[in-house]
Image (spheres, rainbow, N blue to C red):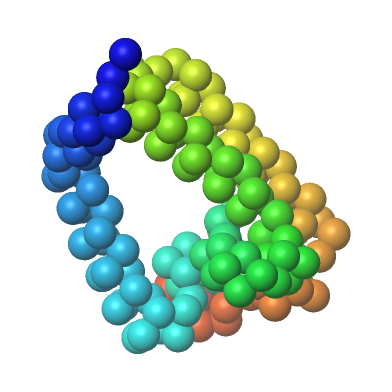
Amino acid sequence: MYKAADKIKMILKRIQKDGLVIFCIIVFSALYHVFFMKVLNGICPIKCITGYPCPGCGITRACISVFHLKLMQAFMLNPSFVSWGLFFAFFVVRRYIMGKTNDKAVMYFLIAVIIATIVIYIIRMVLLYPSEPVLTYYEDNLFSHFFP
């Protein structure tokens, strides 16, 4: 049986082992925030290139809405934020608390979440495009300059 201090040391050791990956995610997030949020006014990279929203469009805003306790607004922005939140929690518990580093359950859960996100995206594009604010066409996209 582990003591609480031993458990905390074990978790910190695992986080330190993943330090480079965590650092890269933080740097990417900062660069993404500066470039896409500040320079392009929050337009996602896929939308900048193709003009069409990606399956993940609205997830960041949905998570921010959850933190502001606006659950209905979050669900309308992108309902798949729920499955991604559950996946993230599942991953953190399995990896850092239970210590499972090579875990097929995490991979299966990730595949299920990706499939669910794509299915939700297709349904939203068929039923809601382009009437919802997240699901709009960006006319000044990169492809429009090459293929008018």
